[in-house]
Image (cartoon, rainbow, N blue to C red):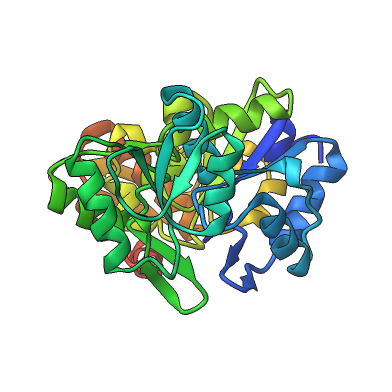
Length: 328
């Protein structure tokens, strides 16, 4: 395992939804991949934008899915949001919470007072995902924000991966309040680098690898933190999205799923790949043969270097690979 991707790093920071599991269903190969990282002696941390569960609840869910974990290994956007509030508000300040009781507990732990309705002494609003968030909750938050309260969003993920598919995430509810108030929230979770920096620091790591399925949160957060990343195609990221990714959302490595962590880093790095030839003029012309994901790595490299994102196949093998990637 000395040449495995994870062996080149002193910690692996895993996203959860869409990377390790979909709701109540573990993604095949995820437990074995995490076990391999642990067995090598590399630190493991779970970094999630989902603010609806306390670290202990996340641990319980992971264990149910066959992934041993400890609360100290879990870092949530609710913790990050509470940290932001604690830094900006005086002790005991009133915070209107839109979210779960787990988010309430994090805010209380930061030395602040929580309420569910607006009032003259509300100093801030904190908003995190909860399946029970309703119009009435947004209405109270709207009034407080319009009155000048600090607004902190745990995250702005537009969607939430589940076993049934993509569902509305906290970002969709944040968008409703943004429209109603013309105010931009302070974002505590990914893509801000705070969660990754805190997780790495807790592991004593100086060279971590971020692993996730979203370009706009996981990968953008890694870029913002100045660390390497691996994007997996088990959640939100798609081949089309990767080709057109902006510089702030481009991963270092690309793989189908977490099982690739045990492969050689050079096999996963985005760049030219053996067997495939990609040239760029008006289109990206793909020729050769081999693994479809290798072709995607080569295409991403060419697209990011040239700005050309339309693709055509030169030959049957290239056409089959592009079809497999959904790029035909």
